[in-house]
Amino acid sequence: MNNPRLLIIDIRSFEDYLKGHVPRAVNASFALPISAWTALRNGLLLEVPPAECLFNAMSSIGVRDDSIIVVVGGTGNPRSVADAARVATTLLYAGVKNVAILDGGYEKWAREGRPVSTDIITPQPTPYRGVLNEAMFVAKEYVLSKVILKDRETVIVDARTSEVYFGVEVEPWAPVPGHIPGAKNLPAPWLLNKDWTFKSLDVLSAMASSIVGDDRSREIIVYCGIGGYASLLWYVLHEMLGYANVKIFDGAWQEWVSREPRGPVAVYVWE
Image (cartoon, rainbow, N blue to C red; front, side, top):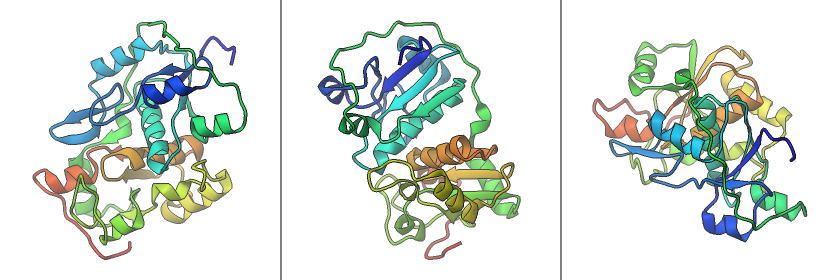
């Protein structure tokens, strides 16, 4: 906690932050449709902010090139964990090298009797201009080419719930049933225990291996409805399990079915 490079970012609402937070944590809330971590682009939700906006937001809370960042979120449901993962992946995309998620979020921290503060921490702004990791994200056209060519070297993984993947349920932001043809399904909520902590590395590794195999260099494209669950799956595969070539289709199912040319759809089938 005394490391000067340590930056703790609490992404919960400011109201929740005021009620109590990890000592030294600064507040930079995650919210839809627009926040420091989210943008609305051509009607698509949960897009990465433009580089200049992202760098300015990071500068305002004191992010430096050598920062060791811990993202603290809530844990009321799997989407809260996905929000923390989205912030973590965004920071990694922006060039930060050392980013972690507080497992179990603030609730677990407080429940275990760890130190809690109600002080409002005023960040010390620092100029930040990182090198974007453009390879983290792929466009719809790239994914479509993989589907059309039936590229067996690449595995596409849908991180939505099995009900949504199969087509018996739809999500409000993209109310078209089904999934990208050829995509396998690994629901992001399955990566978590009932208390919304991450499952053990052994369990996560076994789950991942059954879906994407053991080749850590294989290209993996993850997607979901708008980008949240995909970020959670990306974080587990890339940061926790060491799969080196994982990419996020950030337009997600929302772009796939709502923007011309619309992508092909598979429904009522397991792949």
